[in-house]
Image (cartoon, rainbow, N blue to C red; front, top):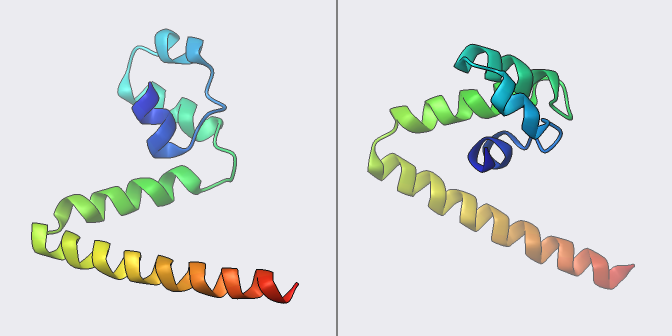
Length: 84
């Protein structure tokens, strides 16, 4: 349950729904029905499928690029906050 909440950012899915939904397909439908932004679940699932298809080296390269991008974004955000 925690994995599904964290992975699909679906805190709105009621705990009871996990127990009342006996199939993976039913659980997937429940998560989609409760997603905060339409299309969010499919977007995350698509990314996870792409990630699964990558080699460990490709994953490391992607992680390095993401970390560098995130660091640059944080610097820009910090500079903007000083201007305000």
